[in-house]
Structure formats: C-alpha cells, structure tokens
Amino acid sequence: MQYRRLGRSGLQVSELSLGSWVTYHNQVDVAAAREMMAAAFDAGVNFFDNAEVYAAGQSEIVMGEALKALKWPRLNYVVSTKFFWGLDREGQAANRKDTLNRKYLTQAIDGSLKRMNLDFIDLVFCHRPDPNTPVEETVWAMSDMVTRGKALYWGTSEWSAQEIRAAWEIADRHHLHKPVMEQPQYNLFHRKRVEQEYARLYEDIGLGLTIWSPLASGLLTGKYRQGVPAGSRGALEGMGFLVKGLTHAEKNAAVARLETVAADLGCPLAQLAIAWAARNPRVSTVITGASKIAQLQDNLRAVDVIPKLTAEVMARIDEIAAPLAS
Image 1 (tube, rainbow, N blue to C red):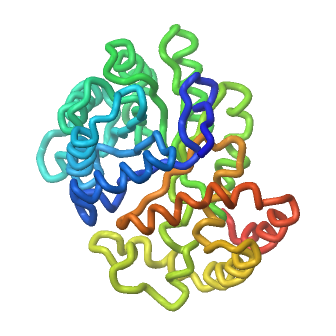
Image 2: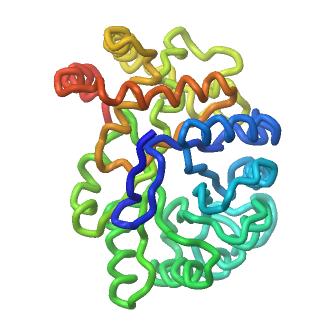
Image 3: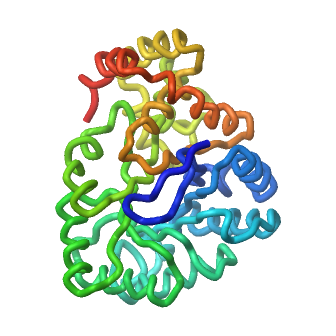
C-alpha cells in the first residue's frame, strides 16, 4: 500500500481506503466492521470514511464501537464524516436538515464525536452545497470547527469547481482554515468533473480528492449484466434509484468488453476499475466498500494492478469506456 498527500496538506492517506456507506448497520454489524477494519488496517489502509447521514447516524456508531475495540493509536488512522442532510428527517427542526448554516454545523460535529467516541475527527466534509446559506457563513463555521480542534481538515463533497473556489477565496481573504479536499464520484463512467471541471483547482489551490464509487455502485463488477441479482446493492431497500444506471444496456455491453481487458491482466474487473481510479495522480485515495471480508480483500488487491496499467492498457480502457462517460 502506498500513501499520498491529501492535496497540498501534509496528511498522508492510503491510496485505497474503506468506507461505510450502505454497508455499516444495514449489512455490517460491529463485529463484522471490526474484522474488516482490522483486515484493511493490516493491509496498510489508514483512512476510514463515514457520514452523519449514513444509516441515520448508526454507521458512525458502528465504526466508533469498532475503533474502540481495535484500540489503535489515534495517530495511526484517519476518520472522516460529512454534514448536510442531518438526522431529523421527519421532524420540524428547520435548522437540522439540508443545510450548512452555523447552528447546524456547530452542533452536528458534537453529535458525530459522541457517536464515534472520538475527541476529534480528522476530515469533515460539507456533504453537498447549500444554496440557501451564504457560503461565507459555512466557511466561517467550518474554519471555527478546525480552530476549536474538533476537526483537523475540512472540505467539500460534490461541490462545483466554482463553489469550491469561492469558499477557498473567502477563507484566504479572511485568513481562515481553507477547504483542503473534495469527495466526488469518480469511475470509468463518471469522470468529467474530476478530469476536466476541477483541472485548474489542483494547481491553483492544491485540492486533494477522496473519491467514492470507483465501481459505479457495482456496475463495474459485471454482476448487473443479467439484471439485478438478489442481495446486491441495487436490490437493497432504498437503493432503487440506482437500478436504471446499473442495468444500462450500453454500459453493461462496455463492461463485458472491459472484462476482457481485465482477463488479459489476470485480475477481476472490479480490481481493474479500482486500480484505474487510483492511477490518477490527482486522486489522494479511492474509497472502497465491502459487506464481507472476502470482498474487501479482493478489492484491496487492486494495488497490485495499478503498475500493470500501462499507457497501452489505459488507451484500450478509454476506447471502451470514455464514449459513455459523463
């Protein structure tokens, strides 16, 4: 496992990391989380991704309990969370959902710290942009969070390049803690934002990336070529919004062709897809997910595939996937 700087910061994160979206609490309990996190850590993973909204806060509880049981030195691992949607989805608390205002952010970090049983969280993301809150207010609140020692670095997730630059410039103008990282979706079929829209930000402000969905929610495993199999992510309750993309005929035809490329490299397609994302030098870490330890171990073997992605192989991959990418 190699380690990369998170953008222009001095923080080192493993090139592959482990996330909890969909799986923790829903498919993975504390015992399973502890086992998988230990296996990932033993393989060199030092970054574990989470969010307040995952499983309505239960994902943070599961990860927190696993960390407590593992008893790792705090310096040896990096943990993240994200704020925007809040937990009060049915109530009347107007300042607790779909917002990045100061009141919500100030209290949200305390909730996450309590659920994860931590003194601070390394990386805190604004999970989506908030068009109803002045970006100045959000930047001040996030900078204050870092100043108070409750977070070490802050960043954004699925913000436009213009929104990220605006936040950075406000922080720079007022000598505040600047956004360090962005967490966008990035995979063979979803790449223009990372490769084109953000292109200037890497040099201009030193933006780092902790990318999610390298397997396009499972499409790039090949499992959806014949429909949605039982027990897959697409079949889970609440994940129906993924089905249209997972059963896309042209993309699944491309997946079949990509499987041939993977076979020529002697690896499964999932490892090829993860390695492809990690090969981008702008990517600080690729967040992987797993519901079983065997799946995790297979995904982590993608580090052995990265050196095999020569210019010739990358050209073959682009010929197949690039025409379908957004």
